[in-house]
Structure formats: C-alpha cells, structure tokens
Length: 96
Image (cartoon, rainbow, N blue to C red):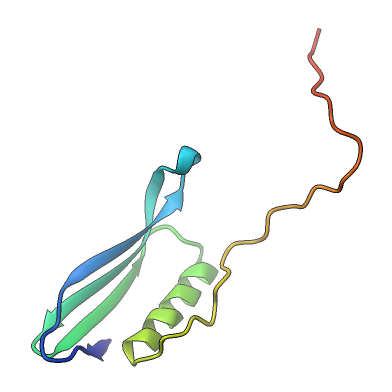
C-alpha cells in the first residue's frame, strides 16, 4: 500500500501487543510499518498472533487509512465480557 505523505514522509512502526496481567504488554500481536519514500509513505501490516478474523478487520482498516479515510469501521474487535447478574453475593468456599 502507498499513502500520500505531504512534503516529507516519516518512517515508523506501530506494534499492537496482547493484553497481559497488571496492564503489562503481552506478546506482539500485530505490526504496522510506515516507510517514508519521497513525498509518499509505504504502509504494510503483519499479523503476528491475532485470529484471522481480527487480523482481517485490522488489515481492512489499515488499507482504508492508507487511502485517506480517518474513521474506524470495526471499533470493537473483542467479544464483550460476560455480565454477572445482580443477586446474592457469592461466598468463596474453602475445601476442608
């Protein structure tokens, strides 16, 4: 992919990590590389660990951004957390 970059283009890498415990970064899951070439920017993405469905969604967003779109079509890529129904508080049982 190539995208317009104005007078000069910058290079860089954006890496998406898995979420790990205690808000630490997990393993690398998806990489977006930007390479300035003259007044344009070459854009490439690499799936490192995501499911094919999520990777396809992110890749389609990258392709749209590369041609100038500024919106996200696929905002939520993770399933919602199960909701606990209100009721009696649970008491942890200890084995004896």
